[in-house]
Image (cartoon, rainbow over all chains, first blue to last red; front, side, top):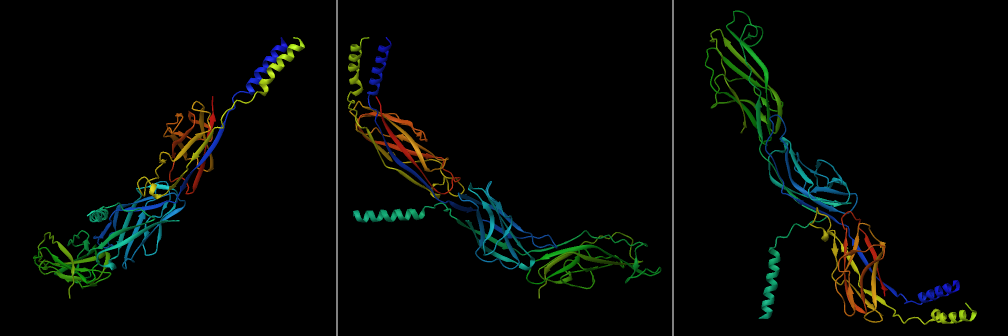
Length: 161
Length: 180
Length: 163
């Protein structure tokens, strides 16, 4: 009996080994996503600054405009925003800009006096997408500036390393 | 015909693209135009007027010094009030003074002198009968100045004939063009 | 059991060990196509101030699959799929979806997007030779938090002959 069981088991094993052969084949393809550097800046608003009053005995009062915003998207690290104006301000007249840092990214440099050479207004910007950072302009003038007829300046904001 | 039609359509397509107001394109650089202006600023204010009370404790001799009993005229002075002025004018400004109503009481006179850190001050000016139509200069030559808390000195003169009463003239200081 | 009976049984069973192999076909898969996508400022959801669109989808049939070498229309098979990353970002997730039945044979399953992982998973099945099975690809998880670089992964399609 024992031997019969052995032989029957061997038969079963033989049948199993000679069962249908399992075929398999492999083919491949690649998926590639090339993430480019993205550094986008957009400024909206039409700021208008008029100095028109003073407290008697004091210099003219500063004019302020907070109607502008700066939208930013970057996937870079340690970026900064600089600002400059196209033409120097008249003597005794100062234009300042304050750009808020994007949410959770970067440090605003506060009120920065604008000149024809670029100055940092926000530094240390890490990857961020924010459409709301506020831009505040301040115009100040001493009495020595006299009366200034309506004039314009083009402020250039640059997002860079 | 076909060629003309396709040409017309191409031109129309181009023109329509020119009229489409696309969004401002974002970039690494963004420009913004800021409009600036400084208007003419001419401001003068004065602190509340003094109260000059002629009484034996504070009167002086007319012209200054201790009052001598028996003198007909006497005066009191006050230098407790000030004025402040700001002007960004590129041409000279002046400050004038006048009363709302001339002082008509017998023997009563009012004089005023304004200090100025920047302008040319007049010597004390009599304003007893100076009214709006004929203001007098008290400071001249103010050119792009901002002077705060300049002293106003009043000198009121009365005589023994001056009726005992309360007189409340309003003194008006005006910052105006000096002219030639 | 007598010796002669044992010998008989052995000779009876021996052929089973040396029986010629059943004539199974060498089933084969051919995948044609690939997907290369550039993600740049034009993919921002709404310009400056907005993040990247998170999901990208290829055209239907970006990749096509041919199955050949089956023994006939009834020869059943299954396609397994997995990925092997080259330079990949764990925030990115690839998906595949079968978008056509091809020509010939029969195909079923795989008609919804399924994520491709590092582990083999069944994609779709069928029987017989089939050509031109269209596959559409999708990738999710893009954002500006992903460093600028090129990220690649290789999708492995394995055809398994099944009974």
